Image (cartoon, rainbow over all chains, first blue to last red; front, side, top):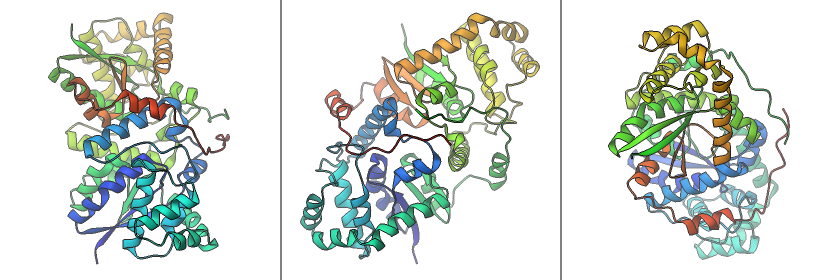
Amino acid sequence: MARAIELYFDFISPYAYLAWTQIHRLADEHGAVVAPRPILFAALLDANKTKGPAEIPAKRVWVFKDTFRRAAYAGVPFAPPPAHPFNPLLALRVASVAQTEAQRRLAIDTLFHAVWGGGPGVTDEATVRELLTTAGLDGDALVEAAQSPEVKASVRARTEEALSRGVFGVPTMVIDDELFWGLDSFDHLERFLEGRDVLRSDELSRWRDLPASSQRKAVKSP
Amino acid sequence: MARAIELYFDFISPYAYLAWTQIHRLADEHGAVVAPRPILFAALLDANKTKGPAEIPAKRVWVFKDTFRRAAYAGVPFAPPPAHPFNPLLALRVASVAQTEAQRRLAIDTLFHAVWGGGPGVTDEATVRELLTTAGLDGDALVEAAQSPEVKASVRARTEEALSRGVFGVPTMVIDDELFWGLDSFDHLERFLEGRDVLRSDELSRWRDLPASSQRKAVKSP
């Protein structure tokens, strides 16, 4: 059985989009498969009581510049959605509906492209139905199934699972319980898949046990 | 006159250390010079009411793994300091004392190595004096000058300047008023230096003007 690269992602993140456009080739090259894990990024921020990149004005500008450049270098279509941040729940739920893995990949492709590839976004239900149908899927059935209590619960459960595994951002790739965060960890992931990772567990435990000699005060409410 | 790459950094950051070990070669290759800008990273977090990577437990583990791997691939010595987080102010001030640029570079080299290269850290004054003296600098004079009101004020002023320019993290490299955040932006920086940046200002303004259609509630106090 092929090794699975679990990909935790949210449509809100342009880095998750770029990762999605690259991860299948990387998996193919290493005889692995991609297991998509749609989660709500905002819930990770809530759990960690911190801000996302788009919530710090200067960082928001950087993220755009960085992802625009990376998309250009990778030759991937890239344009901001009609609004951002936006509510990604409908799209996350569509991606979580029970379907074949080929259908799921096509649905995720379609939804990501609608957000970051110059499309109309994924917040309007009628638009999402139409996009999926145009892609060759059953848009009406997918959107209906997406609104079932089971599917809504599955996005919540996946998000909780992510938090319990130590996922703090998207995209995060997990293989053999080892986490790789971010588009710029693809090099690390590739070395790991090839058995060439350099990380030593004794070094890691040294860091885990490191004392703090100074701390900032807790973050205050704005 | 050579183009200057301004490098905003804090000794607290292992990414800033790795950037420091790479930036001079990159500058040399492009006929540029490095202008070090020591700033207090914690003050950026305070201003943005957010958390640093070391303040989110799962992210702290990731940062160690990521920087350990990057250091290994780059062939750079890397080991955590005796404690982390720690108070970097003495080191930031030593790096800010009026001195020749060659002396400043040697002082920063010495201090960074003491933190991330397996050394004794930079929080103890006697240790810092000794490290600087062993490196061939006048450790006593540097530590004394570091404690002058003018030098203390200059670290604060640099940090304020950084915030006003849109710096939100370290390392940040600035050239021709264009900001490049993080070790993984070296590729972007290199293309920019070579006149091969792909970013178009019309795309940037499209993003800046993007509306939000959904927002998280404000981050609450822990």
